[in-house]
Image (cartoon, rainbow over all chains, first blue to last red):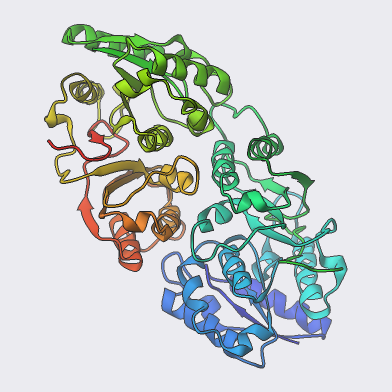
Length: 277
Length: 277
C-alpha cells in the first residue's frame, strides 16, 4: 500500500510530516510518499496553482500509488479541482482519495467523476491541538485515516452510516453548489460540519444549501460538530442544532440527527456513496 | 411621496431614526413613516420572522406608501423574502424598494417578481462612521437615497451605469444563487462589493459566483469597494481587484472596472434593470 501526500490547498508543516512518517514506520503496513510540493509556500497557498495541480496530477497518474492523501485544508483546492479532472488516466481511477475541509471541493468533483473518495483525517491533523485534543489524539486521527486507507477497517468509519453518504464542511458545500464540482445528492445522507464561523453565517449558509433542489433530494442532513463558533453580537438566539433543524423543516429535508465528524481529532471517515460495512 | 421604513434584518438604532426624520423634515419634500417593528429585538434580528414579515407585508400592501426603504442590513431578510412575495397585491407593484447589503436578498427576489428595486443607502447609514466617513457623510448618504426615491435625481446614481445593472454584496449574491430569489443576470452589469471578509474568502466566493451559468450571462462584473478586509495569515498574495479580474478571466466574464458602491457613506444608487438616465 503506497500512499502519496500532496497539498492542493495550504502547506503542510514539516513537523507534521515527520510525525506522520514516524507513525507509518511504526505501523509497518504502508509506505508514505510525501511530495515536496507540500512544503511550498506562495501567498496563501502551498505553491502556485500550477505547482499544486502538477503535483496532484503526478500522483493521480502514477500507477504505483494506491491512495492520494490530501495533506491539509485551508483554502485553494477549488482553484485546481476542475483542471485535475481533465482527461483522467485509468491509473487515477485505481486509487482512493482522502481528506476533508477545503479538500471537499476535490472530494465532490472526484466522486462525481467516478473516483473512490472518502472524508477523513489528514496528515496536518497530527499536530492539531486545543480543547481536549492533544498530540495523542492527533496520532489517533492519523491511525484512523490509515486504518481505512490500508485495511478498510470499519472501526475508522462514522459509526452511524446506514446507506450512501457524503460529508462536507458546510461553507465548502455552499461554495460548490452550482459549480462543475457539484455531485448528485439524491438519496444520500449528507453529513455537514462547520468551524470558526458566527451562527448568523451558519444560518445564512443553511438557507443557501437547503434551497438547492439537488440538496433537497438528499435522504437526510446530519449535523457534525460546529466548533470554535465566533461571537455573534448580539447572541444569535438559537444554537447550531436548532438552526440546522429549522432549515431542514423549512425545506422538507429529513434531519437525521448528529454525526461524528468535525474539525478535530475525533473526526471519522465517511466514504462517499454506497459503502456496506 | 410617502416612504415607509421597515427592518427585515436587524434593528434600527433609535438615534439613526431621529436623525433621518430630522433630515426629512428639513427637506420638506417627503413623509417618512418609520414602522415600530424597526426597533424590535429578537436575538440577532429586528423581531421574530413573523413580526418582520408582517411589517414588510403591511407596507407593501398599503396603497398610500410610495416607497419601502429597508432600515439597515445585518442578516435575516433571506428568512422572509420568499414569503413576502406570496400572492402579491397590486399595491406592492406600485412602489420602489431600496436598500443594500443583506437587503440584497429582497432586491433580488423582488426584482425577479417584477417590482421596482434599487440598491442604495439605508437609514442606519446616517450614523455610519469610521475612516474618512463622519456624520456629515452619513447625512449625504441619506440625502442621496432620498434624492433618488423622491425626485429620481440622476446625481444620486452610480455614475458609470451604461445599461441594465444590478448591485450586490458578494457574499449575499453567493448565498442567493440557486435559491428561489435568484434573478436572471443575462446582459446585466453586475456590481459587487464586500465588507469584513478575509481575501481568501473573497477568492472562494468569486469562484462560486463566477461558476454560475447564470452569472456568466452577465455583460460585465464591476467591482465596488472591498472594505475592512480582515487579516489573512499568511498574506493572501493578491488584492481584491486582482482576485476579481482573475475569476472574470477564468470564467469568460468581461471585467468592467471599478464601481462606486460599498459599505460606506459614499455608496451610490443602482436601480435594478434597465434605467435610462
